Length: 108
Image (cartoon, rainbow, N blue to C red; front, side):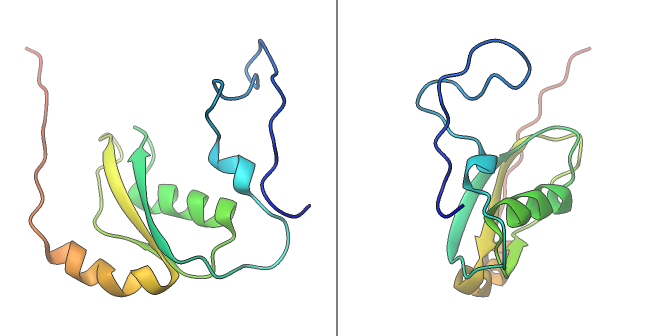
């Protein structure tokens, strides 16, 4: 298969597919050799997955040769995790050193 898969409008069930107009990362998975991918992807990291696990999953789905993230989020945390691919990994060090803010919500 070459290029992204188009998802038919499936309904119901666990594997029902994305909401209309939304694609899953798995829609871009291509079998075969790793490829050059350049750019920064802003990932809304899900709870329960480490930053390295999230990076590894996206790298696998995109079949990217080179990838890195710009700082770790705790596996229990959700939030924006910038992922760098290819040439963009050269700026990841600069992003690692940049000021970051975290917002937390606590219930007592």
